[in-house]
Length: 396
Image (cartoon, rainbow, N blue to C red):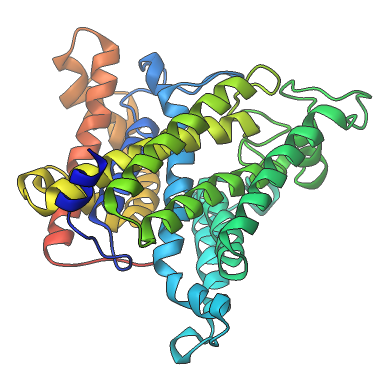
């Protein structure tokens, strides 16, 4: 059976742009935007909420999926310079300043995230420093330099060192001021470090003393990106397509099972990005990528109908950072624009539109809240589709 598959599947390019990767990125960021923009923050279905502490929901998989995709994308964007360095053939004319470009892009992402935290008050004494875009920027920088300067075997060892090292840090080292290692929200080692270095004035306001995108937990987040790097390196290899797909599925299943097993002694937890969480989310991301790769780039290469359904997600994927940034900024601007409601009360224009045109259509307020999020996604979908058709891609 394997021989037949290898003979019938088309050969795919080992460099360039994968349609499936853009679609997977687009699906991920669209879901992220939906979760972040409900019609009513107090009303949403359980799968669209984060787990309170230990455990996970589908929503908890969105951010690690994106970091995994960042890792995969690195292998396609930096594959040429990496190969030349590892083969000892020099950097090449087109590789000058690769390192500075990596740092510049990572810091740009960090700055965009910091701007979102500043807006609209711009109070440096009370602004949150970490955030989603900040973590993406740091993971991008770390994984890019690791990819450029190590081989696949070394990357595996680095990944293993990160996961085991973080587990030991969190479960063996006594927390200063507490006296014993623990995984409780306010007294674990990661929370202590955030409280010490960032101070309560510069962390997530809902937690007060620690941050879900904090300092120490960024280390295992780099591990999530490295899983993407390893998957991307595998996809760019010269093996038959059927073998690539089979091993991606196998690796995804094994990683997911490993995460579930590790949950017994290091609970799955997004807030502190535990090693078990890295394994589970990375494994499921690998399964998602393998599925998209099979349907879009392999089967879709011969049957174009299998690609057409993915194009709206591709439109999201090629401008993922742009839409994520603007989808966080524009609702805040709309909240500042005050409108008088039917009862005479004053509210932000975003809430006014929701209360006037969406909420009255539903008897269940949770459905109304979900409809508000979906409407937001559809509006952005139209904008991004126009940009995609006009080949407008805003690169950070």
